[in-house]
Length: 124
Ligand code: AMP
Ligand code: ZN
Image (cartoon, rainbow, N blue to C red; front, top):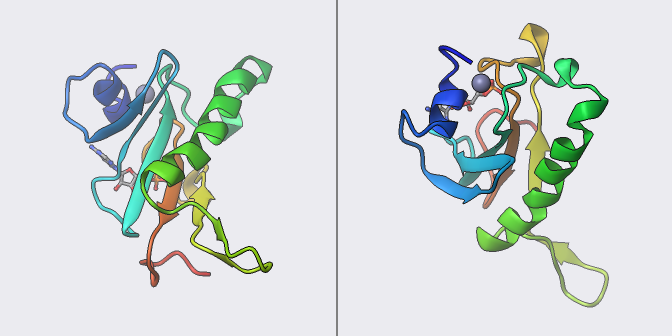
């Protein structure tokens, strides 16, 4: 897609700090992190928003979601259990969709936030 910044990252026309790549999805560090760990997971094929997804996107959406816990492990923000029912760690996932959803880049992306709180402007 012409003039799509995330398509340009996929095409390696502009640099990004890539943390995962396969044939279908790409994950990279957000350029303006709102948390100590702030990653973006995108489909390589351009789709503007979650609202533009159809049944043909089911597989790539599943791939994006199941990648998140693996990235959390690799970046030290996985949920840990103390064996007594207590938990620590963890992360937040978010897909902003459309103007009222706060979407600024119109290539579908899933945010993953983690690390020591507080995080900037993300509520609880
Ligand atoms: P959203 O508001 O959900 O559309 O979020 C877009 C996100 O993309 C923001 O968190 C930006 O900081 C991030 N972003 C914009 N341009 C780049 C880039 N070139 N590399 C990495 N992240 C970017
Ligand atoms: Zn795009």
